[in-house]
Image (cartoon, rainbow, N blue to C red; front, side, top):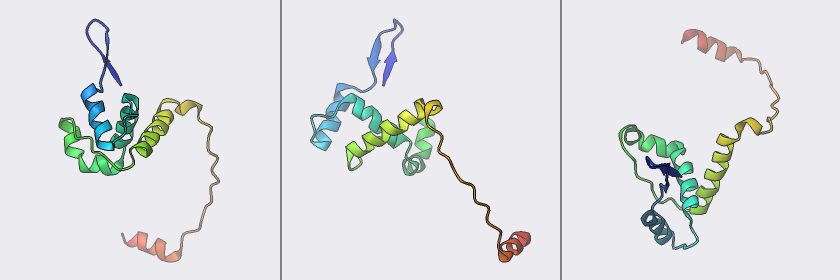
Length: 113
């Protein structure tokens, strides 16, 4: 969300121009820079986006597309960020392991490969 200059001054990475672009595109003046940050977090973790812009992600800043339902993406970004930041405090999800016997055909197929 922020970067710091050599004197330690905090600078917002989302410019006023960028904020205006989002507000105008979605016709929503209530969009904030923090919303855009969460939106970008969700988009950058989207497997389809990562596949499409794989080469760009290795060498430059890829484009940030305007997906439908901006606020849904913001919500996903908030949830994902919370999981990434607070992963040590999340309640473990209890799983029940079920061992299924392998079918005879599957075993024979695996031997041939």
